[in-house]
Image (cartoon, rainbow, N blue to C red; front, top):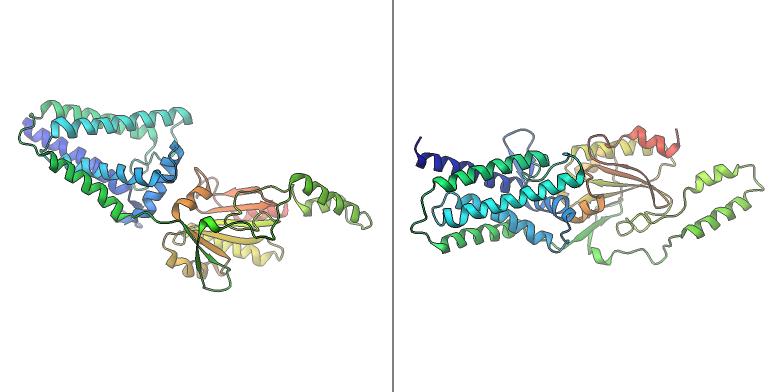
Length: 373
C-alpha cells in the first residue's frame, strides 16, 4: 500500500472517530436494538452538560454554549480531516491538541476518582466507555495522527475561508439543532389534565408554609410527650410517629410541602420503562397501605406527550410537575440516574433509590424502611 492510500485510510478512520463521537453526543442511545439510533439533541446535550461539564466546574450559564461549540468542533474536525485545506498545518495539529486535552482531563478524572468506573461521555450514551478505555483510544488516535502528519504532503493550494466556513457551519448547526430553552415547570395536581407553565424563578414556599428549626422541632416533640403522659401510648411510639428532627431537603422549589411529614418524591422520564414499572409498584403499595406517604412526581421534559400513557400503565395519576432536562438532572443529583425514588420524613432523606443497578428501586425495600418491617 502506497503513502497516498495509507494517508486516506488514516484520514477516514480519524474522521469517522470524530463524527461518530459528535453524533453520539446528540443521541439518547440505540432504539431497542442496533443499528437504529434515537436522536434527541436537546436531551442528549443537556445530559452531557450536567453529567460531564457541570461536574468539571462549568456554570449552568456557560455549559450550554460550551457543549454545543465542542460538539460542533468535533463535527468540523471530522469533515476537515477529509478536506485538503490546511490539513497538515492546521487540522492535524488542532486535532492532536484537542485529543491531548481529553487525555489530560480523563487522566485527572481517573486519578481523582481512584478508579475506572462510570461513562466518560466520549460517545455519550451510545457507546459507554470507561475513562481508561477512552484514554487508550485517544492515545492510539494521537499516534495515528502523528503518522498521518509525517506521511502527508505539505499543504498546497489551501483556502482558509473553507476551513472557517466548515467550522462555523458545524457550530451554528448545533445551536439550530438543539436550541437552548428557558427553564420552565409544568404543573398538574393529579386530578385533572390542565397544566400551567410558570417560570422556575417564581417557585417558592407557600406563604403559609413553615419549616421548623431543629430546636423548634424538639420543643414540638416535648410538648407532644407531655400531653400524652395521660394516655397509655408509649413515648417512644409517639416519637416514632413524629419522625426525625425537621430538616430542609432542598426540594421545596419543586413542592412547597415536601419537607412536611412523610413524602415519596419520584424523578421519572415519561418514556422510561423502568420508571413506569416503579410507578406501578408504588401505586400497588399505596393501595395496600392506607397510611402510605403522599406521592409526588417530577418528570423530565423529554417526550411529555407520553405522560398520559405513563399513568395509564401505572394505574393512577399522581400529582406531577414537568421540568427542564438540565434542572431535572441537577435536582436528581450527581452520579444518579432514573428512575429516582426518594423517601423523605420531615425533610430528611431516609432512602434514595436510583438507576437500574445496585441502587435500583425495590418496592419491598421501600415498604420495609417505611413500616420498619
